Image 1 (cartoon, chains in turn red, cyan):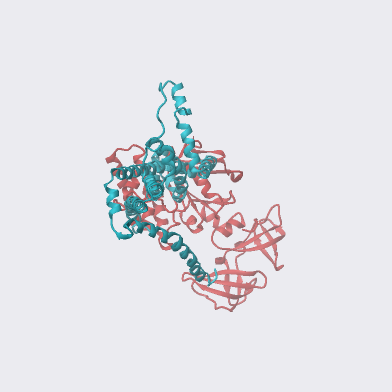
Image 2 (cartoon, each protein chain N blue to C red):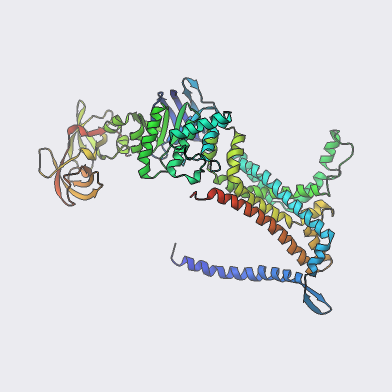
Length: 354
Length: 286
């Protein structure tokens, strides 16, 4: 497996520039997710890596070798497409053999390697089935086998779970991740599903309007996002529009734009006084008794999800807040309660409205 | 959509159905019925004589086979050329695609008579092709390029290619590009992608478009007359002779029935074959 580098990539559709000056390095065996809403340019980047789209500028290297001008059929990059696009007129094993046949691998060797790849995805008992005879999950496995059988320098995946049921999705994420780690595949995963990105990636690259807004390991991105956009996009959060009043090192006192309520938060903006405070729903502590520093609140809506309960709260100072309760302490709708949080859980972040 | 719309649609069918029955179904049935009726001395009788006469005539059989050969040849060649053009329009650069598309539409707008006469000039005894061949020293005397089966076939293909191309554009557009991307990404050159992925996935929907060319060609009159010079005796010419020279409408109707039967047989055979293939592919796929 190989190290992959993108340097000042530019992608344009006619006069419209979709991506400009994008830089990204992916280490050997690393799984990097490109995460962003639709239109953020993540699929364009993936297509440029695969060679299906000619960049308007910049360069790409695999193990130091420039591949920018190499046509896709000579790139040795495996790709799992959205909807898998297995060839409908070929059986499972023929689909997997296709990439070996184009490389001139002898017939017996071809079959042996195709079966071996299908064994890795537990599909070796379906050799002669046609794609329409397979379930979505099985098609995905075959698509994965077809991509890895050519022993690619890297693996690209374009929304690989998009066509799967929610139930099947988590299982597939686990399996693909395990296989990727076992084979040490340098992988780029494009997804708009933040849960998928967090569960599978070594590193997440958050994209918005053709730019990288944040990048890092899932833990860091979730707990210490750099922008309000990242905080909102990964998981769920309460974003409060605020104005900075005073700064004290890495802490600040801010005022809510809408209610005028003042609070102390973690982090201080530089260059601007306008920003957002991000407060994760699971960090909000709900109590029925008043404690020092706690704010009064009322439960507007209660939604029970089994693993947890979501409470939509209305507070005089902070407006509408979402809080997540685990198991106990479930309040009824209309209940009056008090909310509080650890000072470091309220993070001041820069950003325009996500 | 308002609730009343379906009812309105149903009412809208009535004038259409009326128009269809009065101006299409009635005259056609009346005309074809004429093929079974023979008038002799004031009394008319039902008989198959027109058909036995026609099937007994070697001229009719020859012209049926000429028509079949001409229409199938035109259909096949137009399908191949139309497919290649449609592929360029859909899958290549937008500029090239637009140029091809405009050229095809422009030739569709031109009268078929003008196009046939154009070929007469081009292929004529003293036309530019013969002159060029002599100038290059390939032949010493002008070739007879016109008034034969080949010139009629060229004229017919010229008429049908744009029609088939326009019909094939949606067929090719329907195939998601990711299939071709997948093949290319797996190392297949463009031509191999076309032959092993693109063509097998689209031909079942493309062949019925070629069928339109076959059916249209079978009934063509002007091009065989203008480019065949009386030597390419298609069934349309026989029908015209029977009805407008001999005034034997019953015989003309019988020839029409035979033409319809022949083309229907070809159409059914093709549709059954492609439909069967499609079913094999689509079985349980959705």
